[in-house]
Image (cartoon, rainbow, N blue to C red; front, side, top):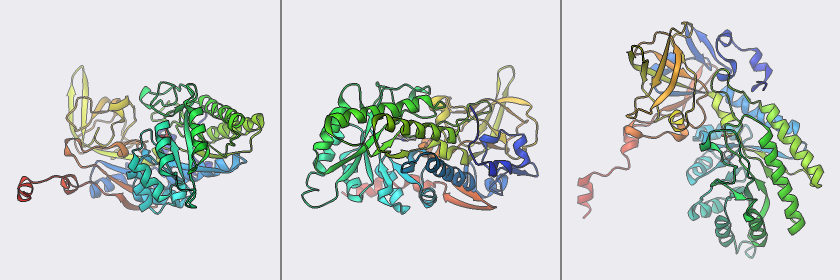
Length: 467
Ligand SMILES: *Cc1c(COP(=O)(O)O)cnc(C)c1O
């Protein structure tokens, strides 16, 4: 598969460091000075000294370039209307939402928490969509009250609640709530079982096969407060082949044709979700945004011709493929333990609390020593975290220079499903996210404090005083 995530313009200017490092694993602004890794014009050793570690560094240029590339490639290759919605669950905070919306992205949310951040960031509700397989009633009420652009309905039960909550809208002259139905198209993709979502045996989506999807169309069309705009599917994440994504579109459109025949309903919007994979290590397949968009655009266009549809609005929902490469995680080495004949453990000051992916689904990353980028690797080591679990292993069998306590390690491709899945296990505060660009560093989300962690805790004295 060919590799080309960012525009030639930026890649051509790739600094000489890129001759050593795998070019598509590091942010576009990556360079080096005095043997140190430099991101967005900022020396990572200085960032670590000033802001502490673990530290997540977001290269704003990489993010902007990738975001604009998604939008322009879709507009160029799909002749109908189109939108890119960032799947917020990959990584979200208010400043990040502000940046993305300022570049023309919509936001996909899966909870009231994510909706609250989108609101605080000033996102227009019309460009915010609510997803989720089990949206509690109060979340639906809030989403309706805020006026989110679309609710992506995942079950018949959710649809019944929505129909009830919106029943009087039409009578009261209010706009109907626009919805999409998330279908389960019964497609297996080759990715880790925990991140497959399109197979029939999945908690996600209304199965086409069992007739539940058809029943949902019927109910949606009978609900006076709802306007069924279109269909949605999301097959899974970290997908590195385009064929199943195209098949997903074909199944949705065939279903839309059946629904038109039976109910006279016209498809106006279509979303094949997100799911495009990224490389994490040298030698990993590197799916190409351009080719991915081309495949989807061509498939939708061809299926429209085949079924005699007008081109629907095409909505793509990238999470990982939009954010992963923009972020590098920095850790300080705390201890080195060689066990002759077995392995060397390098323990760092973060781990599964800020990045659970290696423990959760055997995710593999690459690493360099950021304060010695030119040093040759001399040993194979296992990099472990500081959390009290033997499974807290960040990197297995990686090549590093002779690493000492105090050394700075940098893990690229750290933007997606890391901080957004972070926990306060062991009551270790969650790391900061600092944005870098043109030599300027700004903390987009500060490190958690002990006060933050203890804010919910009660003192027994206070409780007794309330009696
Ligand atoms: C998680 C999710 C996405 C994004 O998936 P990525 O693999 O991060 O691109 C898109 N759409 C829906 C509905 C999702 O749940």
